[in-house]
Length: 575
Image 1 (spheres, rainbow, N blue to C red):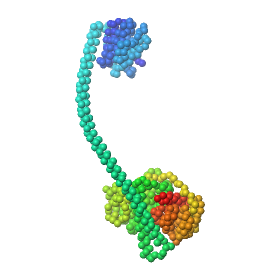
Image 2 (spheres, one colour; image 1 turned 90 degrees about the vertical axis):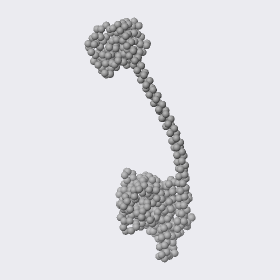
Image 3 (cartoon, one colour; image 1 turned 180 degrees about the vertical axis):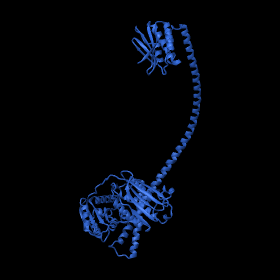
Image 4 (tube, rainbow, N blue to C red; image 1 turned 180 degrees about the horizontal axis):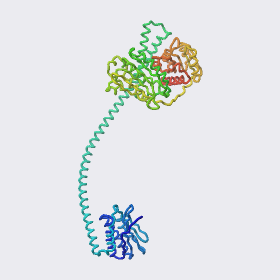
C-alpha cells in the first residue's frame, strides 16, 4: 500500500489535543474532504486524544494520504504503554470514521476520500512549523462549527416539517380517493356477483338444454334405425336372386327404395354419432389403415354422386407415407362428408383429392379442393355450426342435415387432428384434414369355436381358411349365400366371413337376413369386397359388420376385421 506522510504530531497534554483537532480539520480540508467530513475527522481525533491524555499516555499521530484505491486519509496513532481502547470517545470515532483498527501498540483511523486533492506543500510546511492557536481560539472554532451544525439542523428540521405537511396533505387525498374507489369497487363487485349468478343460471340452462338435445337425438336416432334397417333388409331380400321374380319396373322401384333407405340410415347414423361426439361417448377404435383401400372406397362412393360430365374427380397418386393408425370408419366419414359437399356445390371443373405428408414429421394431410361456387368470407366461420347451411342457389334440393362439416370436425378432433377450410367465392374451396400418425395398438381377435366361410371361388375360400386357421377351432364352408344362411341357422357359428359377390345370395343380402334373425343378429360378420364397393361399405358398416378387401386377405388384415366385427357385435348385444 503506497502512502504519503503529510504531518506528524506528539500528543501529551490537553493543549496537544486542541492542536490535534485543529490539524485534523486542516489536513482533511487539504486532501479534499468536504466541511462535514472535516468536522467528523476533527471530532474523532479530539475524543480519542482526550481519552489518551486522561490515561496519561504519550501518543504520536501521523497523518498519511493513500492515493491507491480506495483512496483515504489515514491517521496512525502509536503509544508505548498499554491503552484501554474503549469508552465513549472510541465509540464516537467508530461512528464518525469509515474504519477504526486498534492494536496493542496503536490505532489507525481511516476516512475515505472520493476525490483526492494534491495537498499544497507550502501549506503542509506551515502546518508542521506552526505551533497552533490557543485553546480559546480552538473553542471559538468549535463553537462556530456547533452553531453552523445547529443552523443546518434547524434548516433540515423546517424542511422536514414542510415535507411532513405535504405528505399529510397527500395522505388525506389518498384516503379520500381510496374511500371513493372503495365505494365504486363495492358497487362494481355487487354488479359482478349478480352477473356471475346470472351467468351460472344461464350456463345451467344451456347445459340442461344441450343434455336434452343430445338425449333427443340419441333416442330418436335409435327409434328410427330399427325400422330403417328392416326396410333395407326387406328390399335386399326382394332383390336377392333366390327370391320371387320381379318385373323390371318392380326391381327398379325396389332399388330406389333400398337406395333411399340406405341414405336415410346414413343420415340417422350421422345424427346419432354427432350426439355421441358432443356428449363425449364416441370413442375411436385405432388400427392401421390401408390408405389405398380407403381411397378406392371413397372414389367408388363419390363418382356416382357427380352431377354431370362437366365435373371430374381427380385422385392424386399416393406418395410414400408414414403408417397411419387411426379409426378407419371415422376417417372415411370425415372424407366422405367433405367430398359430398364438394360434389354438391361444384357445377363444372374438378374435385381433387390428395393424401400427403403433413407439416409435422408425424402427420398426414388429406386435401379436398374443388372449383365450385365457393363460400363468402362472412359465412366461412359458420360452416362448422350445427344445422347451418350456407344459403346459395345450389343448396336448393340438396339433401343433408347441416351436420356434415360440424360432425366431420368433431370426428377430426376425436382422432387428435384438425379440419380447416379456406374458400374464395367463384374460385373454389379447399378443406384440409390433418391427422397424427399413432402407434399401432393392435389387439388380437377373440378365438372362436366355429367360423362359417361363404365364397363361390375355391381358391378364395382356401385363402380365407388359412387366414382364420389360428382363430377358429372349426371352419365350415359354403359355396353360395343361401347355403351359408342355412348352415348359419343350423350351426349358429361364432363368426361369418362372406363374399360380397357370393352366388345365389350376395354377402350384403346374407348380412341383412342375419341382422333380422333374433338368434343370429349379434354374430360377428366380415364381408369380403372387390375393387368397387360403391354404396356397399356404407350399408355394411351401418349393419354392424366389418369389411376387408379381397386383394389384401392375410391373417393380419382378416384378424383386424374380425376384431372390429367382434367389438361391434358386443356393443350390439349390450344394447
